[in-house]
Amino acid sequence: MSSTITLLRPEIRQMKPYRSAEFIDGLVRLNANENPWRPPGDPTTAGLNRYPEPRPLTLATSLAAHYGVAPAQLLVTRGSSEAIDVVIRAFCRAGQDEVVICPPTFGMYETYAQIQGAPIRRIPLLREQGYAPDIPAILAQWTTATRLLFLCSPNNPTGNSVPVAQIHQLATALAGRGVVVLDAAYAEFAALDPTRELLEQHDNVVVLRTLSKALALAGVRCGALLARAELVTLLGCVLPPYTFPTLCAEAVQRCLEPAHAAEWQQRIGRIKAARDRLAAALAALPGIRRVWPSEANFLLVEVTDAARVVEATRRGGVLIRDFSWDPHLPDCIRITVGDPAENTQLLQALARP
Image (cartoon, rainbow, N blue to C red; front, side, top):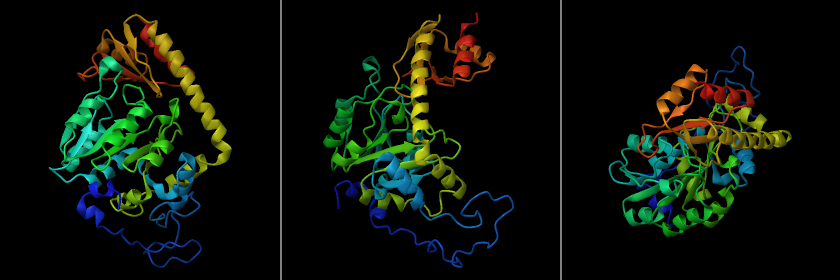
């Protein structure tokens, strides 16, 4: 048993996976209390009258190939948000085991920790260093009750990536004491994807991925939790069977077909190029103080009057995200990179007096 496994809640370490009805393709299924007839309008291959696989093994195999890991290292989740919930529930006893977050960052880490009753330790990113993690503070404030460190890279909403060397440093320093959870939802838009490298070198790293961004499947809600196989098996005990719907699994399978790979790469390249053009155009507008560097599909923009900017874009038919309420993001808004027409509409709205 690895030292990371010992950090799991004792009851999770002792759990056995729920034994659902046996699933064997090609055999008549009279073991799951299903309806034998398809519903009207059923477009699926497998049939919506049948439960999906207890764990979508076919999909997991395809996703593992997509991310370059073994199938046993991957747990399919409903978006990466569900993976956040799974990790916190598995490692944190209510009122006892802490979670470290580094604001400003994705708000769901805090939300799921609150739901679980896990104490939250907040160690802010260093704004003057481009929103870099405060590694000395993280290590100095780690206690015997601390279990998880959430790092988002590229970070939402700031857009910057955490250097891989710093993630290695944290994982090494916390070996046997804590788990580094790397939320890599925007990794496809960055210069480097460290997923395989980190998983090969550390058993206390969990990587979260999603198909909502680069693969345009936000409406399907498909994510993946990647870790060492032994840990994935135990984390899977937290999820009930049949969690991933047949319609969604078949949609993802179609998108992951090798014939589409070149198109996805082309689209990612177009978004990155559009991001850079949009950043330059925004920086030239009055009222824009700073456009922060980004390796995601969005831009963090510091403005002179956030309320005015948000209202101007709304009048122009465009919604953007106001973060000026956050003390770590003074006067900041976040803008998602759209298609050329959408980006032009945004710029025109901002250029109006």
